[in-house]
Length: 191
Image 1: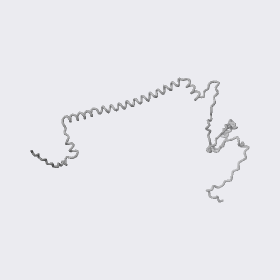
Image 2 (image 1 turned 120 degrees about the vertical axis):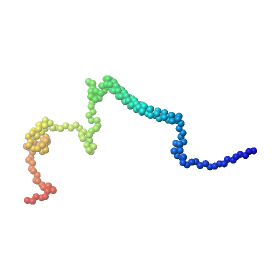
Image 3 (image 1 turned 90 degrees about the horizontal axis):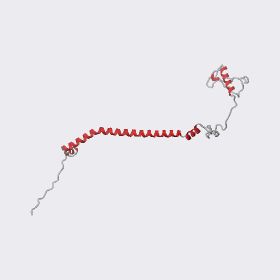
Image 4 (image 1 turned 30 degrees about the vertical axis):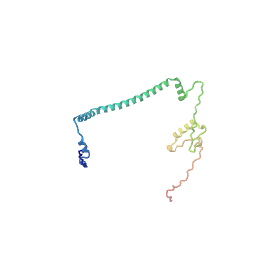
C-alpha cells in the first residue's frame, strides 16, 4: 500500500493593499462586446431623451386641453339647460310672479313688508310698532325754510330751522343775555 502524501495546511493572508473601490475597478475585465453594449445604451439614452421629454410635454398638454374641453362642455350644457328653461312658459310665469310681483286679473296679491325682522334699539326694544304720521304741513315748512334762509343775515352755522311747535318770532319773549362768567382757567379780572 502506498502511503498517501500528507498535505500540509498553511494559513493564507489576504493582501491588504487591494481592498476598497480601487480593487473592484481593477477586477472588472472589459471585453469588446461589453464596450459595444455600453456604447449602444449610452447612445440610445442620448438620442431618445429629447424625444421622451417632448412626448411627456405633449401628454401633459393633451391632458390640460382635455380638461379644458370638459369644462367648456359642462358650461355649454349649463347654458343649454338655461335656454331650455327660458323656453318653458311656466318658468317665465313663475319668474314674473316671484320677481316682478305679477298676478293674473282677479287674483289678490299680498306683499309682506315686514317679515318679523323689526329693527331694535340698543336695549332690544322695537323702534316702532305702528306706522307714525306727522301733522306737519310740508309745503308751509318748505316755504318758511326758504324764506328764513333768504332773508337772514346770520351766518349758515347760526341759522335755526323754524318748527311748528315754537311760536313765531313776534310772539317770542326777548332773550335776556346771561351775565358773562369768567372761564375757570382765566385769572380773575382786576378792576
